[in-house]
Length: 401
Ligand SMILES: Cc1ncc(COP(=O)(O)OP(=O)(O)O)c(N)n1
Ligand SMILES: Cc1ncsc1CCOP(=O)(O)O
Ligand SMILES: [Mg+2]
Figure 1: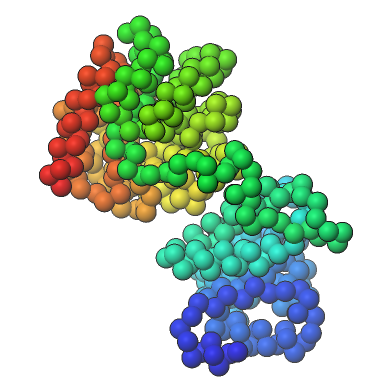
Figure 2: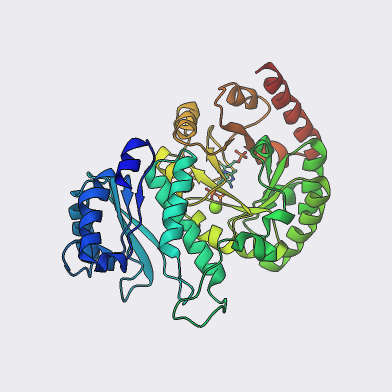
């Protein structure tokens, strides 16, 4: 096998198995032959212990030491998986690239259906690498996938063994998460993103439903309900009505901050910021078929949002705004930095109106898909006219590009 691997320039994964390591000759073969060719080695704590002659691994510090020692056998990356560590509500894995350690934290899912998690993780890492991800991203995406699959399979009853299998195709199984029956996220829908505001609607005597209808009539391509001071019951009723309006126009509807409302009205997704619950948690609650947007002001936040499974980034305030208190202005430089740091589609937000929207889109950043606007659409008497005007400005910039 080693000869074939040396001959062909393939990625090599070594997903160790506690059973196979019981045999001393296999252990030696892994350590002395295979590891030096491996891009990544992914032992769990028991396997790491066996590879290192039986050392005890009880703490994160022990896992780091183990990762460092296994790295010396020659792989380019090591992931020591902590899913078997006792007494923790978290499943913490330690990733090591020879210079830095990264602790990857996930939830421990209480279930007997864990058969094949290690193989699934390794296969999923390989699939992400094939798609062009960096090793750390690939590991993070794979870990999120395994965690979601465990969560959605935790109550399956199949077979009588001590471990049950888990469902890799969980995404096709559960109706609310059934992406087959829902529109997939199209980044082009970020082109003209209308974000509502209850205070503005009140000021102009508009109901939320009327404001959303008017924005869609004017050409909004996606809508977010950002209703900060409305009671939950009234919010849900309005959200359900808006869902009907949006569905019949084929426009996705997202809910700002409130995952509970999004679940209750079966919205297309949720937008969260840096102080809201994380995209990772939202993904677990909404499932893989829903759209998740994350507000990012820095490349580091953009990187984290990608790892957490976000679908798009909202970046701003690009210009000063009074709609969101104490919101720092990033300017074009801040927007560029976030766009360049991410593969995710980005929508610019903050102080965008008919006068400056063209200049934002003229930056020509490939993943900058559109603008998100609150006051220039909704703090106006005629929402449809303002939306139509902005849409025609954006369309003319797009035609020139
Ligand atoms: C598209 C879009 N981008 C950014 C935001 C801001 O979200 P957040 O930072 O959570 O602030 P609030 O909107 O919750 O006040 C957004 N809502 N939409
Ligand atoms: C919610 C939000 N997040 C960053 S800026 C902003 C407010 C955008 O509102 P406006 O379009 O009225 O400036
Ligand atoms: Mg928020």
